[in-house]
Amino acid sequence: AQSVTQLDSQVPVFEEAPVELRCNYSSSVSVYLFWYVQYPNQGLQLLLKYLSGSTLVESINGFEAEFNKSQTSFHLRKPSVHISDTAEYFCAVSDLQGAQKLVFGQGTRLTINP
Amino acid sequence: DAGVIQSPRHEVTEMGQEVTLRCKPISGHNSLFWYRQTMMRGLELLIYFNNNVPIDDSGMPEDRFSAKMPNASFSTLKIQPSEPRDSAVYFCASSLFSGGYNEQFFGPGTRLTVL
Image (tube, rainbow over all chains, first blue to last red; front, side, top):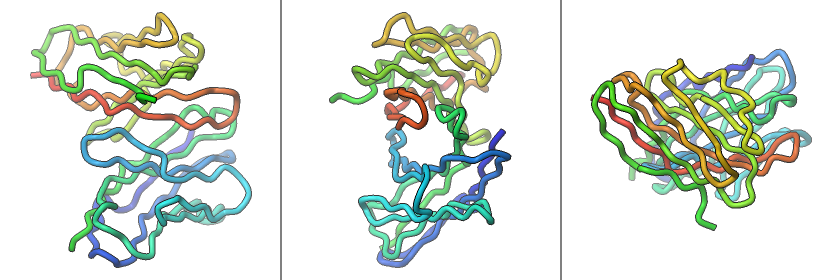
């Protein structure tokens, strides 16, 4: 079985500052990794995913995450955040055989201060 | 595309009452998932269907919970009888399953409060 740990429940940052949201996973088999974003009163939206190939993956709105197998991590980063990035961010994992079953972390609430 | 539709968006009920949550997946999708989100347990998968057939219900907390998918465009999650600890946000998601990874699209959720 897989598990996901998001080390920070809340991360406050100033606008235009860089941010890193940390995610570590545990699994005995190869995995797919995901970051989802949840804006207030909305459902989750896929932000980016790692399936295979390049360990650095990017989203269309400037976020990136790097798969580090040796450290079992998939941290999310953005060099300069905007007010509109205020949301809750969830890291998730699934194994290659049971790819439909997502296991989510507890979430990190990102708050952007002007 | 209207996306995944859930109803009601908010439900307040009293302990012991039956609660039915509804979901309409994205047209053409053949997989449907029910999740529950609470502060204590985070976001957890309850059950999922492929082609209207339940594949894995290991996340359903107890016999009070049941889910059905009578056709490709409709699913229900029923709690009978409801208890205060069932208070949570329930999400439905759908995907076009073709083996391997397929993106899940989430609905806006139903916020359930059991008094």
